[in-house]
Image (cartoon, rainbow over all chains, first blue to last red; front, side, top):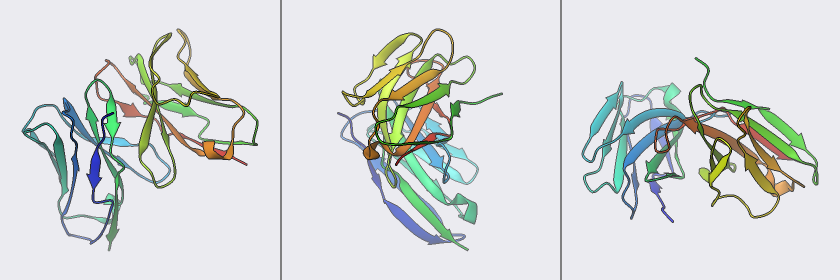
Length: 108
Length: 113
């Protein structure tokens, strides 16, 4: 089956720093999605990418759909304490496959 | 503008009992997906349903688990004779089309004593 490798598994950063995380796969996907999950809540969609090479921003978040369609990255600029949570990537190709998440901790 | 609704939010069951988890998709959505999340882990796909049809149940355990999405009413994930290993957060998501973006509910946290 399709598998996604999401890295890093966790990050501990200082408030104000930039963050970068990525997902890679041996499979090709038609859509890449990035979600954020706060403790005790369901994942909330942050950014959706529909075309290879697409670069999309949502406030301080920027995500790109890799040219090969096998990878994607998410950047968060100037992190703030409320950015803490678990970030998941998901690739869609008929059905969705999720990465195992990147847990982000931001120290004030 | 109600999103995906799940209830109950928390469910406690003793070993051997049945658990029923409900999911009402977003208005206008006819595709429902169930996922399981163990503590400190990612989301694992369980089943994908459309109204009255199971489209893909490749992630469902072969025994004790079943799902339905009737013509009227919410989608139900049913776990019979629960065991401690069933303790997890169960999330439902819905989409408007088969390959459309999925929107998640708040989850049901099942604890088996």
